[in-house]
Amino acid sequence: MGYRNYCYFCALKNRYYLLIYQMIENNICEEIKERIGNARHICIIPHVNPDGDAIGSVLGLHHLMQKLGKSSVVVSPNNFPEFLEWMPGASEILIHSANKEAAENAIQPADLIFLLDFNSPSRIDQLAPLITEHQAFKVLIDHHLDPKDFCDIMISDTSVSSASELLYQLIVGMGYEDLINADSATGIYVGIMTDTGSYSYSITPECHRITASLLEKGIDAIQIHNAVYDTYSESRMRLLGFCLSERMIVDYEKCLALIYLRKDDLRRFKYQPGDTEGVVNYALSIKGVMMAGIFIERKDYIKVSFRSKGNLPVNTIAHDYFQGGGHLNASGGSYNGTLDEAIAKFVEVSQQKK
Image (cartoon, rainbow, N blue to C red; front, side, top):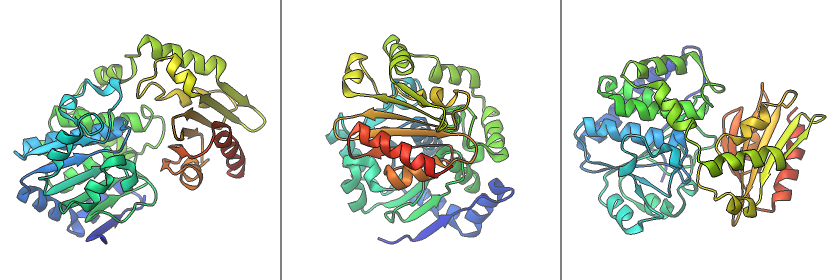
């Protein structure tokens, strides 16, 4: 379709303020603000298997739309992890995989669609043809490599911590910062917190300044952290123990650690979406390990997540070999092959990056 506007911002000194300035200078904020004002029905969509940033950013935007008095609905391709169900507005999200008719009926009348935290129609699964063929004006807000050409306006920056951080910058650029209430701030904060591993990677001074602004909106950071990270089910905790005791491989010579799970393992521990969130970080925390990966065998593919220390670029590994992307030190993707093949490929290409 060709972008009506395309914004790709690089990381520069005082980037937070520069991003806002560039968006204003290019009339991006003004056009999106005008589109919101004229919209009768707004639809907001995260990627398939949505994580904290995806759910946090869509809910953050949804609550802002409500403050503006707009008709807004969030439609997710499939369900999201249980540890995010407490979030304000989460119960209102329509799940396409669970109720296809209701979800598609909600999308159909939209004249403005926001797409958050993904870079390609393939990342919204069965919603892809509906969205790409829809006549509504589309705005994408994302931070992954190589965004595809399918939106009218794209705001994309691979150097920011999260889509939630980029959303906050857009809100400021539109002059709506004062309309961010505690519910909206909670969503944005969850997105930044989870996509930085609780502020352990992909952080900048700007990221902390935004976080300070969110705290001033009245959110309870301690309660939010507990709700996300301290609500493990017994089966999830036992799965973690199994990963570390039975499914972890450490190669000190290669400075590498791997965790893998087979389909039978997932059934044994009654796997639920989100149960393996953060497990790869335990492998990376081993002294001497510079790069780690987790490989999860699903029905038709291998789900992967990578972590690294220093300047080792796991985002390029995910992008070039695993149909994914992400941050320099945290990324993910998938592999169309066997579990053993996926592991072998990661071991091979990881050594090329050192």
